[in-house]
Amino acid sequence: MNESVINQVSDTAFMAAAYRAMETDRPNSMFHDPLAAKLAGEQGRRIISSLPKQAFIGGWTVVIRTRIIDDFIRAAIADGVDTILNLGAGLDTRPYRMELSKSLRWIEVDYPHVIDLKEVRLSGETPRCRLERVRLDLADVDARRTFLNKVATQSKKVLVLTEAVTPYLSVDAAASLGGDLRSHESIRYWVADYFSPASYEYRRRSGMSQAMKNAPFLFEPKDYFGFFAQIGWKPKETRYFAIEAERLRRPAPFPLTIRVVMRIMEIFASPQRRREMKRYAGFVLFEPAKPEERAATKNSDAQQEHAADAKDRRG
Image (cartoon, rainbow, N blue to C red; front, side, top):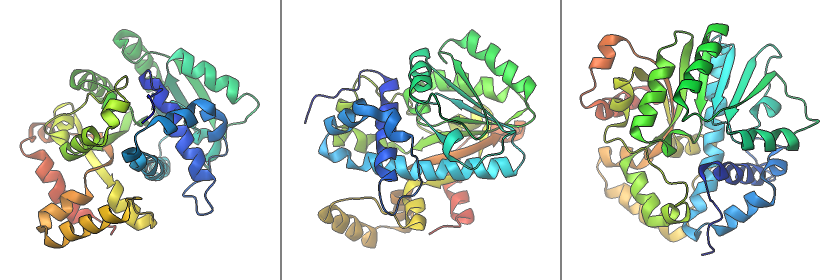
């Protein structure tokens, strides 16, 4: 394995953009992102080539998560959202590639060096909505709160997107951010990554943790949904990579031997274990929880699994 060229969390944006560029070049692509290659550049390609062979699943998850989040955004806009607030926006190009109303306000927030690079590489390109960019370190709590207050008071209905952001936050930092978001009535939706404990273990075994030692995953609450309930958020919809991939007919690109082993395990596994195998990771669309819902946090992960079984419309 080559030495990783990921030196900080913001470098992962180049990796994601490179994967989106690769998907765009496929004849049966799940989406079309013509600006991804320009943003990824040589750095994105180097990062991908430096990852361990076991990390092949990473590109697939970027593709599936992109489709999941696109769907969440479309549904939220149809529900009246007038502002998309993309925290840790990285090299995302949705304001340019999605069909959006010109009146929609889209705000991208990231470190100054990320925003600077993006503005240079996308100079001359025209977004399809009212796009704003803000240079802000989200770890600066006072500046973040001032900024969120300004956006919230200027908007009627906000969707906050934290794609590939919360995994890199400590539990305390995620709680602080979630509490700040929950304090504003106009912030109605929050999209965040979901990882099960098993997925974190696989990440360690696959070598990804070592390859990304300079951008480690920090957010590993014992009870994921219970954590969010305690800070005022409940799941409106959860989409899991494996289940969504079945719907899109884009299965994970596991080698044949692994696919055979997984199939055998699935045949002999209990119904609960089969559910767990398909729900190891994904994305959650959260909405504000009522006070009585915040209090009901016991066994919330199990409750979420039960609710997912009842509501699952894919498969």
